[in-house]
Length: 301
Image 1 (cartoon, rainbow, N blue to C red):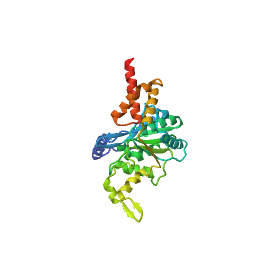
Image 2: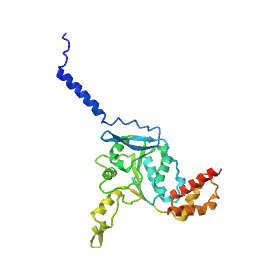
Image 3: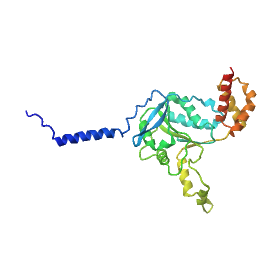
Image 4: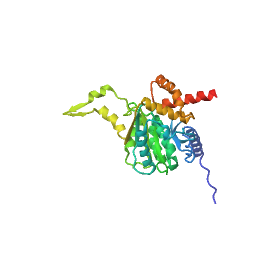
């Protein structure tokens, strides 16, 4: 038998050159994403990778310690809790349910409601993936990664708002409205915002409004802004607390931190001053006041 012929010197040089080029290119390629620890957590976040000169996509990362809060901790939002919990129960049961947009006053429990629902329904398979607004452009990748899993997922976007022309705006519209592919039944998007239509609204846009007979037709700018929020099937509004609602929240959080039932009467005036100094009454302000009381009490012991 003839011994195999060695490749020509030119070919050897080309192969060596190609290998060196591949080694250099590997430095610019993003590493393989780490496996998702689905069995280690109930909450996750989308983490963006930046590798080399270009963005390198992202990956789903487990959140080992999730803020523990219950539905009973959330005072003054009974109607809102009922609406969002019912929708979440439908998701967990595999029944039709809607994407949810929660808007309104700051500190009234919008994001806390999502955390409380997660803790209540985690044993039934509910999971939450938090996505920053700047990463919404990656929504198709996130949906593809979880579409076939047995769990039910809420993709959670907190404090969501857009400026005109942002890339995430279009990505969110596409996912909410669906594409030619069927929407996965195990995924919903829950978003919170201080803006009802998620975009800044300007007085000049009212000048585009037309009157046709007795009918009022908004201009194109207004229609475009409404078109995004309309894609959420469930709108839930949150409102500033009355003083009684604020006091109820303070009582609840004081009990949470181990104060006696009658402790509020001694702290009522402090609670009022605390809210006045912040110019707001809300569940968040009540929680912060109770934490301050608990901290001061711990130092006095």
